[in-house]
Length: 566
Image 1 (spheres, rainbow, N blue to C red):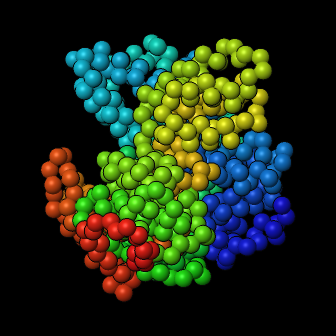
Image 2 (spheres, helix red, strand yellow; image 1 turned 60 degrees about the vertical axis):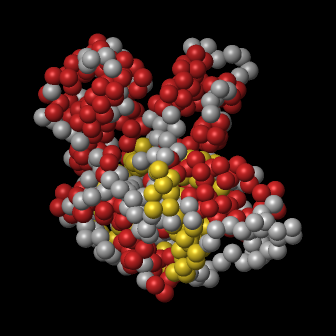
């Protein structure tokens, strides 16, 4: 790929971000501004200017993000791609440990951690889980003082006796190696450029790790958007993003301002909302979309059951309204549009417990869907155990597809089928032993977004957190009510600002149409709760929304007539 073609199709700000290579750089990339394109072109540009692939590290938060970038870069690098690291923090740390850790180790699963912690508490699962959460938090917050606690030290001693490391140890031990191992430091000293995706989501441990790399090269390029910082509950600290210029002397900032995803209405509405946050770096965002700027639909329904049915009806309307469910109701409506695929739709919600009613409506309708939620880690660990059985000896004639079929045979296909497909797509071209090792590592470092199957032609049902990094033509946000959006546990100003950022993320997943649904009442823990619209409703200008109220369903008529729902 020539230098000119690397820059082809980039706007002025993207071009500046790709070609600025002199010292620390913060790229502030709002939603839909071509962040992934900019990162991948920057990597190609560095290689074009003489930087070796082995001298570049690009760190992501999910395997999904890393895989998408690799797929964009690989066609242009041929053999040169050897040595380029593009993946998660944990995978990078694991690579360092595998090379330079001074003793054999194995990664320990959560169920093994709980067994250890039961032995040093009162033996109950509840106490063990609480202590595990505490230890994980201490490590990710890089709380050196709390690492001196007796329970923490006892747990670490047992891990050492078992030659084991837990997932939270990976970055911590890798960072220690860079400070104490001459070989590890000499290897890392080759680096000339470090890129970090989603910088607003780093926690204190990851921050310290990046600072250790800064001791090797000043070319730290951080990419992100503080308005999309939604992981404080995992220890992420937005102060790192706000203080980038303080932490990395002489840092330069570039704003990506052009949004190529959403209509002007969606961009304007989301910008009006997020401006109510105080902790942010204000920056302009302009829609470059030529799509018709439909108003946002704010829909009030009677309860969560009608909410789910309303979503199903609107999707049926756009797809042709041909399901048995729609044909037996008098409330399916509207002209249909065959320019949609099921994968163009997403239903987002704040909490996993909202999913059951929505899922039931999709089951009744026959519309294909994939429910993306936190997959039970016990299921992942069972799959890892089965893969271990294949590690010692792979039967002749078996490839990674056969091995995955066996390992996933008894898994919950609804939750894990996407993960299986993603693993097969990533590693099916590799020799079986190599593929098996990579699959096992990826499963040890599993994060729920890795289970999203973007090749599936189905409606995506997921939490607002899970939707980050994705985009859809049509987005429905269910439960746009006080207590859900923002969530009832959010009380402080900082927590409300994070809830606003989370809703902002949901809004900006939509390319063409956005529906906000509010129930008048909702069943909560067996009781009926009366609801009121979210306070965020009042932060969206009136002229950008249409308000619709769906009355209680009437009795079916013999021959339902299609009408326009909205």
